[in-house]
Length: 227
Image 1 (cartoon, rainbow, N blue to C red):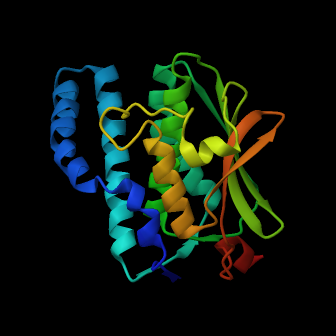
Image 2: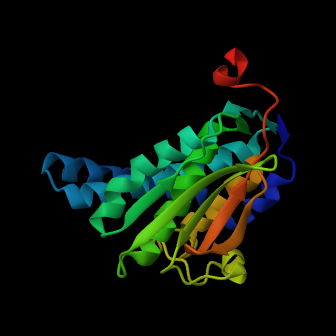
Image 3: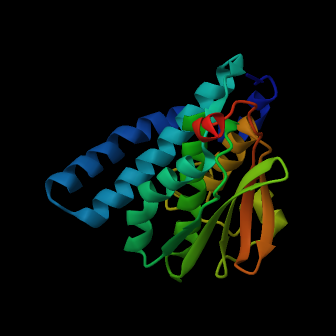
C-alpha cells in the first residue's frame, strides 16, 4: 500500500475533473457515431481522447483514496499492452512505436490501471506532438539495479528537463478541452508519482525522452518460483 496524503496537492493542477466528466459524453457520442459510420480515423481520435479523460477521472479517484494498493505486475507485459492499445493512433499519423522489452521476469509493485492510464497519456502526448513530423518512438523497458523503468525516446522530440515541469513544448490532441496543452504529460506525471518515482527527463542515442521508474516487489514471478 502507498499513502496518498501528499497526492491531493499534486492533483491541484488537474482540478477540472468535473468539467471532464461533462465532456466525456459528447466525445463518447462522437466515437459511437464514427464507429457506426465506419469512420476509422475519427473513431481512433475520439476513443483515445476518451481514454485520456478516463485517466484524469481515475487520478482523481486515487487522490481521494486513503491509500493506494500496489500489486505485483509485469512491467514488460503492461507496457506492451499499453503500446498495442495506442498503436493504431500512432500509425494513423505515420508514427512507428518500437518496443524493446526486458527479458527479466521480475515483478514490480504497481496499480495496473494507474500505470496503463499514465503510459497512454504519455504516449498520447508524444504522438500528438509529432503528428506533423512523423518518425519513430522507442519505448524501452529496463530492469536494472533494482530500479525497473520505462523510457520513451524520439530523435524528433524537442524537449528538455524544464519542459516536463511546464509542458511548454508537449502538445496533446485535447489541448482545447483540458487544463493545458500538456494534458497527457500532466496526467502521466501525476499518476507515475502516485505509484512510482514520477517522471524525469532522459536522453541517449535514440534521442531525447521521458522516463518513469518503479519499485521491485519481493514476490517472485512464476518463472522464478519454479526455476
